[in-house]
Length: 66
Image 1 (cartoon, rainbow, N blue to C red):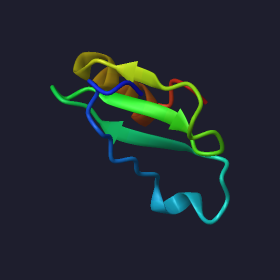
Image 2 (image 1 turned 45 degrees about the horizontal axis):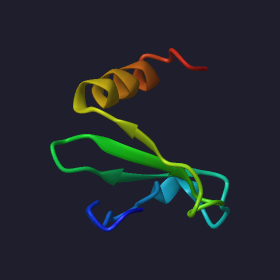
Image 3 (image 1 turned 60 degrees about the vertical axis):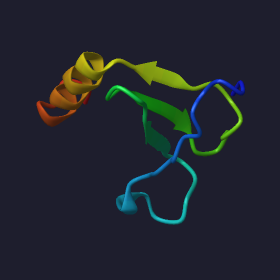
């Protein structure tokens, strides 16, 4: 993360248990979201614009990925 980026507050689902096999999500300024692997917190981060994030959540709820 570079100095001009905001400090992010990461969270993961309470359903994930004590394992580290999940993703963490952080809110971005402007309504977007950042996603990272909980096992590699210093690794790559995916970012989604608000519309992209809403489409992703809609797809999860509709069963589009399973």
